[in-house]
Image 1: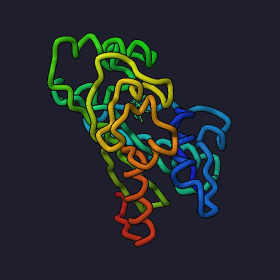
Image 2: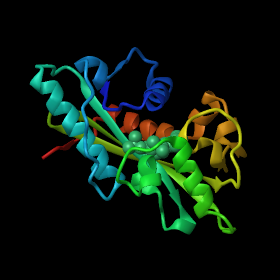
Image 3: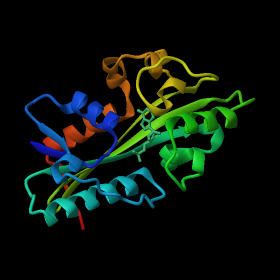
Length: 208
Ligand code: IMP
């Protein structure tokens, strides 16, 4: 299968390659195929809506260049903290600016730590919602992974909130986990596993 992934996030692309790179799939970013980045405003209230916006924008851009032979994969993901009513959620990447502008991972982590000061209920989960578009057909799948927010950063693996997330599955912080360990339990791995199963069952719904 030839897969074009609609993400500008190199860490995500790496993880997706690690998770489904086997079996002779060709996996390339939409950005590399087009030679330019497509900016998509994420205006949805849910991960599923945002993933669909990214996938459709990428597919339209590929079609404009007469590129029709790739399945387009897009995901939207984020961290949901129970004590913060599911925040940062869909604005995880732009949490520091309340979703208004791009921010650094360091700024987002600092804000989360500040918000969590004095809070003992620290359960949280990562969500990943994937969309695969193949022409008019669309398949979606969601994965989650549960843990809790640490009171200080731990480890230097992974990216973004990883060094603040203690994984219940791994009994260690994602920031201390190897890529292989994270990929056995991550939200993205779980979503992709479901997506692969759905695709191999050809359980597609029409994308209207
Ligand atoms: P997206 O690229 O719009 O889906 O934003 C995802 C954001 O959620 C990232 O920029 C991170 O802030 C956060 N996030 C999603 N997955 C992970 C992960 O596996 N580790 C750490 N942070 C993540």
